[in-house]
Length: 281
Ligand SMILES: [Zn+2]
Image (cartoon, rainbow, N blue to C red; front, top):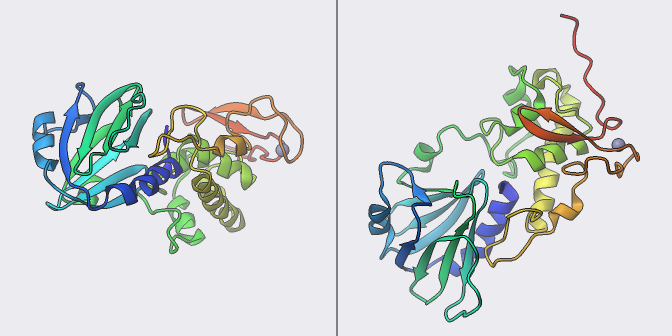
């Protein structure tokens, strides 16, 4: 599932190609992407066709296009959604699982590919209204360790669950939560409100490090993610914990193990990320 780095990769790829372009038509070739109620597919097309893309933004795992009619077109890729730009006259084979295509006034086409069909498109006039519960952006300059400490202060849930909760911080999913916890030597079952200030500072640094590195490498493409030009990212080659069950820890050589935390497969080094000592009941 695309997380912050994958969505940011697509945003950066598409930004120079889409800004200033007028949307000529949209073909939705399936019942999905389902524009969220109450806007029906035809109504969705009517609302965006003829308008110019003025900006491409990202908030957490959401990509959005700001249109010249003031509307924001918010796209959540969920499991397998990709937006792939094709130049005018490109006669190469179109992406598989094409669910929609957006024709631009320069002849280019943006294809919406979504094998599992969980992706969503929403139209809104207010980002805050569409995404009211989203926490801070972890790569924003003003997101400090102290903000993370305050967000965790009253939460007894396992830290992994708290990081996946988009109200704590926006954009982390299973891959980068595991990678950040590994890098900061934190066991995912540690109750969030028991982490020391020093550990939170380490975790804060680790979150920013793994997300920035993943953006630099254009995301993780072990499964479905493709960038806006149809390219694969290479961050999967840099995973230290995620999906490495049974392989040696790069730091200490112990075998990475898989746990289940917050209902998600969770990968740790049992030596580098010692289990928390829980207070006696
Ligand atoms: Zn280790």
